[in-house]
Length: 73
Image 1: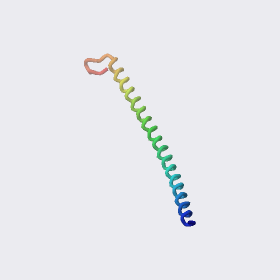
Image 2 (image 1 turned 180 degrees about the vertical axis):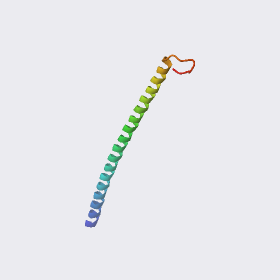
Image 3 (image 1 turned 60 degrees about the vertical axis):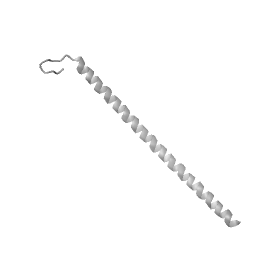
Image 4 (image 1 turned 30 degrees about the horizontal axis):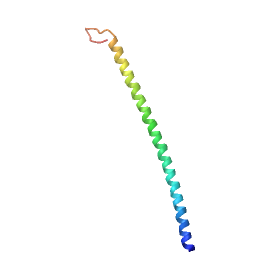
């Protein structure tokens, strides 16, 4: 009986240790995932700003009168 109790206690301790590791890993993955999402959001914002700037430049060019000889604004 004592051996069975010892084995059961060892298993419980091992399970508790593994659960702790799993929680630790999940925490790490979640924090890493959060950082990736932030990076993606920053990149998307950058791209949107660049698109806006490109559109604004195109609009500015469209507003300028075109010199027929050079075809430039």
